[in-house]
Image (cartoon, rainbow, N blue to C red; front, side, top):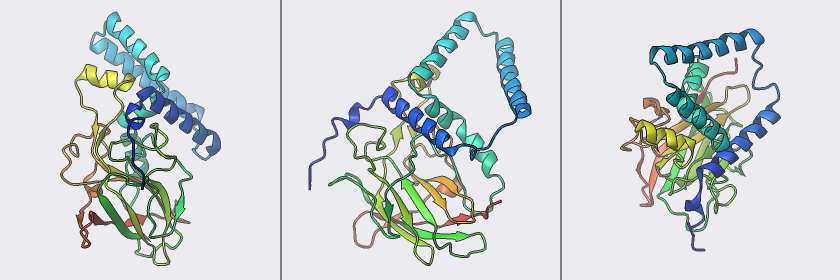
Length: 291
């Protein structure tokens, strides 16, 4: 076993993390091509006009001064310079976009993806252990369940992607000093659609506060905390991919998550592992058929 040094990890800066998130998003959009959908001119006209009108209405109704307007302009420029548009949009707007996208689903509940997803994580057997450092700190967690269709049929061939923060609240590839795929993996379920993931319980964390988003949080007197959570993408042939996060009871920020992503259906029920090492969680994912 090797000792872990957190010196590099805790020096993570919002600008570096934001630049990584922006770069990854651009790569994903470039590779997605038209798969993300094309918005027609009439729709752009309608939505853009509505946004612009809404902002002008706020200025007129609330008597926004030039000082406030210039402060906003400077802040918007800083968001771009810090590379924090993915963070800003995913924290404060994505939960509403996800709600619209998922309102037809009958299966498991989804929630936001957030800015720290990366595709291509190491592929593992149905009961594999997530990549981690020697002596990775944290409470052992066994996460087990089944992927099935809304009619109860087990979905053989389904894949379960998991990524989460470490014990200090940092994500690999978005903070220095972490191995490339630390606490990221993709599991292929067995013939019964079952999986058993061996990982660690993540820690709650604050979103980066030394950049533009932190500046807004401080100015508004908000907090920056996200409750501890596990990120998942679950997919199977012929079924809609679901993106979700799962949460732990008792976290003080389950009720006031800065990203507004917590839903009652996403709360876990951990129990003590019979072997005395950490906790066990049972959770099934139910996927809707492709539309």
